[in-house]
Length: 212
Image (cartoon, rainbow, N blue to C red):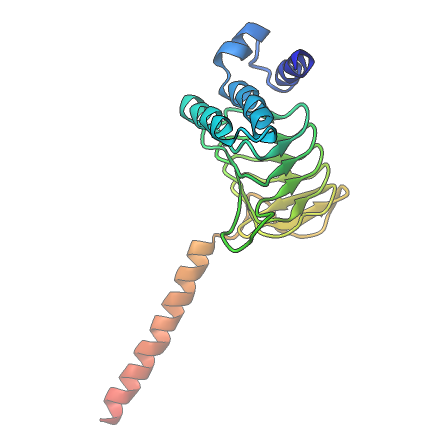
């Protein structure tokens, strides 16, 4: 347990240039607190002390704004940067050396049973506000862009962007012209479709009135 604590501290110092010392991380970093409390809750979850496990996880959520279900399986050197609004579901599996930023949801769609939440491979980075929803895998060494909504599997060594997310880079090579800056706005697209539909209906109505 103590070795795992030191490893978690070291990974924060290596990845966050604002982290000055271990004491600051232990006392003031909500991501570190949430992970530390998750590991306690997960221990009790594995020993069938479900009420105590949930009590610890809910206390962590109140203190840090980060909700990690004690049933989730999280690997080593896990780093949550900033962290506010992060939600990690019960059947989530996270590999080693993963990074999540604020507002990330690793959740379900409400349609699945049993395994309901995503699996992240090793060395996965998930940008701020991204949502990964469903029981599929995000491959090793992959990146999910900020604000993306991932609804299907992402291969190893890939970058996914957009709503819904799609792979734009794989094994270091671009496979799609779409990028994070020029991601289509689904709301604008829907408004354009509705506007076109209204124009068609207005034209049909006008033609009917002229026939009368």
